[in-house]
Image (spheres, rainbow, N blue to C red):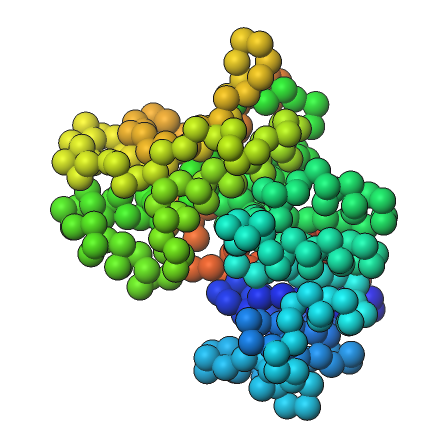
Length: 351
C-alpha cells in the first residue's frame, strides 16, 4: 500500500467535493491501485488545518457544509494561517491547488503556492487556470528542474479530459484547428435568453444553479473561455500563447431576438473558443458567441454540456463532450491527475 500525502488549497465547490470523492473512493483506490490518499493539510480563506497522520475528512466536509473555516478543525485548526505558509511548512508529496482564479492579481496566491511546492520537490495538481495562463512555461521548467510532475487536466472544460486527449492521444499529429465550448454557463444563459427570459433573470438562475462565478464578467465577457483556450494552445499545439493574443467577444452583445431566430433556423448559439492554423503556420485565437448548426459537432450541446473538437492531419476530426450536471467531475480531475502520476495501470485482479 502506497500512502500519498496531500496538501489541499481551496475548499470551495471543487476542494470540498474532492474530499468527498476521496472519502467515497478510499476502498476502490486501495483495491485497484494500491494507494491511500491522506490529506495532511488544508487551507481556506480564513485559516488552515494540519494533521501529519491525515485529517478526518468527514469533519472537514462537515465544517465546510456548515459554512465554517477549517481553522475550526479540532486540535489541528490554525486560524489565520495562509495558503502559502501552509505549503511552506507541511511535508507532503502533492500540492492540490484549487483556490479561485485570480488573474487581476497575477494568479495569486495560487501561483506562489505552486512555485513553492515545485521548488520543494512536490508534485502539483491544479484545476486553477490562473497560474497556467500567467506562467505556463516557467512552471513547466520549474517542474522539470526538480524532477516532479505538473498536472492540470481540470483547467479546461471541467471534467472533460480535453488536455489529456490532445496531449497524449494526438501525439504525432499536426493540429489544424481546435474548437471548444469550454465554459458551461454562457450556453446556459444564452439558452434561457432564447427561451424569452430577461438578462437579469437568466443570470440569477445561473448563479442559483452554482454555475456562474461571483464575478460574472469572468464568464460572461469570455475571459474564462479565453484562459482555457490559452492553456489548450500552449499544451496541445505547443504555441506560446498569451491571454492578450485572444480576440475576445463576450455574450452580452448577443441580442435575445437573434438567439430566438437562430433556434428557429435549427442553430444554437455557443461561446466558441477557436485556435486555427493560418497559411503561414501561425495560429489565430478567438472567443466569440456563434450560431452553430446541428451538423457542427458542438451544435447540439445541452445547457450543462461542454465539448472540444480537434481537427488533425492524420487522426481525422475527434470530438469529446461532457454532460456536467454538478461540479463533481471538475473536482474529480484532481484524482485523475494523481493517478496519472502514481498509478498508471490498475492492479491485475487476484484469482
